[in-house]
Image (tube, rainbow, N blue to C red; front, side):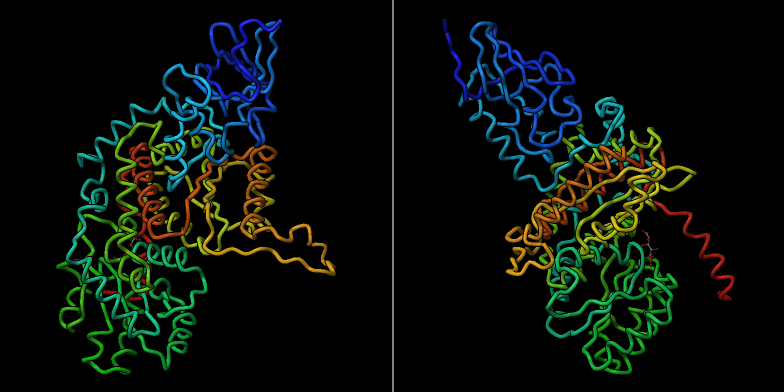
Length: 543
Ligand code: PA5
């Protein structure tokens, strides 16, 4: 009966995918044995299309779950040896070298699996409903990558951010830490006065890392990012009796919103603390040599920090623009710089098999070709709403020119599932979603049991709150992709640490430059912003 039987049930072997059908995949294990993975054994997650999990000709690791010795046929399982949906794309591409079978194969693949596990950011495009292969864009990507690295791309006078993870001014960095230490020691309130790129980065970082209700000093209050009289006057009232520092941030030094707020708070500080003490309490971040703010700060003796000439506002969060308020909030900016250095290393190779920043850049262009002219960034943490605001500025201001570009929008789930969720599920399908989630939440707790259970919620008792949030996310992705036919790009960030934040921001920078240059648009200017200013100045009587 069982002649020359070499395999046993439960053994892990490797094989090559020789055929893919709607009901499963055929796998050749060796010269004599063929196998079949039924669709139900592909993944423990929902399998919409077997192609998302295995590729023809791919070498994969599978578990034998049954053997038919009569015809040398093996029944195989991929899900028994594969991780879950959020990582499967990269895992399924792991190639195991050599012809060993069994434990040795797993051992060989282990370092790669461990490396994947440690990844700071993961991108899964298996739910993106792409109709093209990313690799078809490799040549174009190489060309653009080269032009960014050798500074010949469009807008090349504003690409100081590319090398900034290493080239940043170390002396100024130390001064930032010193000033931040002083603010933390002396201030109850830090007013961060700036708009657009001179504001969004710092706020996005501070909210993501500290949460919306941090319990330490100083309280960070953002001003100069609008012209609401009510907003400004409420701040004036709110800071009364508190120890106040102000960091005014403006590269041009002439931005109206910032200048209006700054004059009001500068006068407040001088009135309350006197001219000499104000020199300590007011810190300006601006151009190193030119501009109204630089002149004003020098004349009045305020400390200044520099916004480098070759870094535009929305690419400036790793400069003093972001770093001073971030450090003043008590966040470790050394870790933040280490995160962006790690990202620099991870994205220096343009290979689309490896470089997730460029994968994201290309995915956006493919989806645009598929008729998706809007992108919705989805977050599941209220403390990441400002990340979405920062991201909208980065992509909107960089890309929306010459009648081109994808319109960037955002939602915070699950709250917006009760408002925009209806449109996303069943409305006009001109958009795709990019879902940005955290693998590990900042805080978590068990949902409590209740003896009376009058609210019928005991079915969740003992479950982590974050697990409940994650299940909502999975259910939503399935609903939007499978029923709503909305492409979903899934980005998972390890945690809300300074390192991860630095990594993510640099990921978005690299992806943004690539995706916009693919449109042959300059990603680093914003000529359209001037139009409203001209009109406003005319109405305000500015001479
Ligand atoms: O990205 C940009 O360049 C803009 O959003 C600016 O940061 C914003 O307009 C503020 O400009 P400034 O720093 O000159 O006050």
